[in-house]
Image (cartoon, rainbow, N blue to C red; front, side):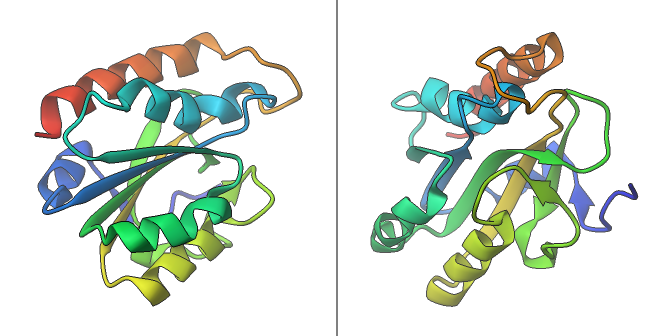
Length: 161
């Protein structure tokens, strides 16, 4: 799979964290590495000076709440197959994401969630994608994913002020 053209760096993400920031962690805890975004969000809750939601595998259930919060920047953290090695992560401008670029492991496409937010809020939306190794049934994270979650947790704790 070819990487999407809108691939960015963590430095770009850091520069994008302006105004009222809201972080959304998406993940299914019953599908091994798919839980990455959800686990990272739960680790960040109450540690960062921003709103953090662990939405599990159903981000659509939080859309009304997110709109009421009126964030200026949204960061979505999710396990996404973007054709990299397990545990690698990438930052994408959500405005450039098409549903055919990436494979989300959830019922509702990440693209539909992003489009809904764009249509209801005029905000900067970034996707912090983590390449899963195993999204089969189970509750065990791959070592590569555990390492990435810890690295990103430390980075976000240092960066989001």
